[in-house]
Image (cartoon, rainbow over all chains, first blue to last red; front, side, top):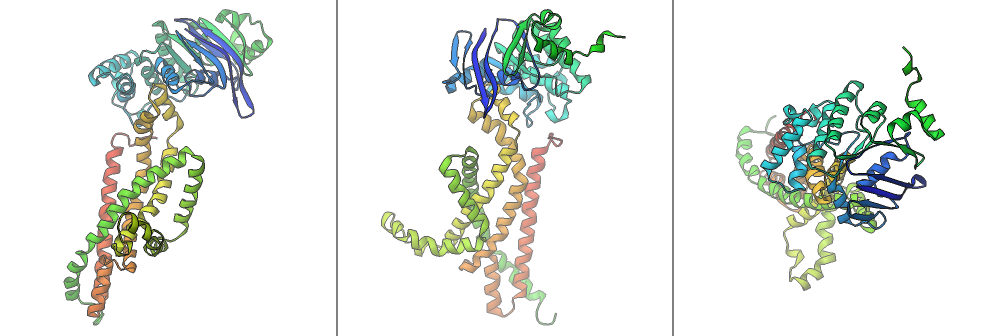
Length: 250
Length: 236
């Protein structure tokens, strides 16, 4: 489905990605874990060209793109075949919920208004936001906004959806409803790469977990392997900080 | 007030003064129309940080904001014919010295507005959070689509109140033109005063017209703002 080889990216002198290679198979749900500053968000944004990686090769389906020489049409191709869900939702502030979801269908996929509306309403219904279709983003809670953000990405039927810490800006009580929606999307069989700190979500949904630190992939494997039998010391240290030790008590 | 002011003279002079409001409106219309277009180019070029052009625009904006409009009008009025006079005469057969003074006034205001509005627009565009543009890109929109459909409408809302204030400012600044011999409503009031020996009625008429029309403009802009905020009143 998608294969990244030798991706490098620096911001000034700061080397954020140093030679990262990952591969995601068709229909797979991959969770990327790692401490902040490990480069996981930059990696995700590079796939969608929201960040321009300095070098590396991306194979996407039949297409092969070199980050160094990627043209405008390559960038558009990737963006039109992948969806992106932002940490802080990124809903168009001047458009209603329905208009947010319809925008790409009408402007990018050139669907008729009526067909776009039919698709948008169906997708909004799936995420439980159909009732709010005429609301503006500012009138919604964070969880509701994120569900619309997911609907906007899903409506375009991308081959791959990228989730950039989709629940980390949410109030704790709103995390659950958002994760439920993401799980529902995962069940449709679409390929997903999710950057998150939600361990139980990763354990439930991920086919594979990739652990990144310091701009490199440290370790990857099944969630059960990574969480309970990590091979690398760095993974163990990270997990011990994330999973509270007293979780076993009571 | 003795003989300084008479209601009769005021009633007599008011219609004559207001008849020249059209001169001011003509200046406002063309200056704002062309000034706004110029400002959009200035704002976009400044945001894109085109190497040499950005530097030149910086100097241009400093000059426009650092000198009084009246000085700029004087320079336009006396300077443009001297510098470009021969060129226009040879190239287009236009004698710049014969042009209406009002045209130079408008050139000065257009250039002035290009700088002031340009900065207002630039601020408004950069105030739109970057995630808005990223969201546009992420659904596959082109750069132009993202700019026109996502960023610009939101920037417009930010810029509008400032634009309204600026618009009213330009209307009031049109009063400067009578110094260059353009007979606008203030010029008319002054001429009538000189002819009759009674100035106050004319100036009071001018003041009433200025304030009425300024309030009218303010009302129009408030109406547009409310329209835009309808439904998104709580936005951001």
